[in-house]
Length: 133
Image (cartoon, rainbow, N blue to C red; front, side):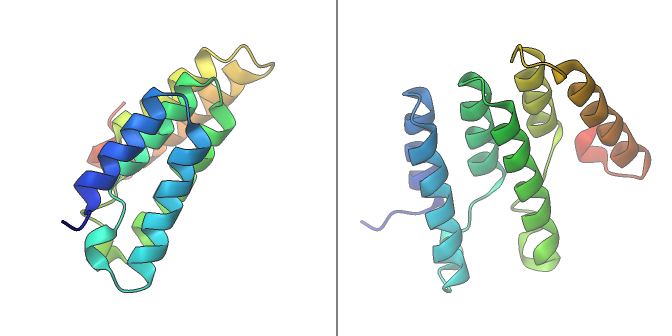
């Protein structure tokens, strides 16, 4: 049996649950490489990215969570026809990153969370219904 995106998302979730953020990140990167090499059924999707963002949030790594959100947004724009429905930076992703900042205890985290919320509102006001605050 060949693994597919569902199988690999399950493994990412298992790594995330066990606090193995680097392994989860590496698997998502490997999925992206497989997609780029022509294995279109291995493309990471919204669930892949949201699971990794949640792993970073749980590990109190808000910058990594936000960087994953930014990567997710870039990937969704790269090849809009093929991936727009597969990868969407949605309200779940934004809210998870907001939660990561709000619970991090890092100096300046409140300001960063506010900036992120402002960006989310801007996207929503521009017509992106997926990021409704």
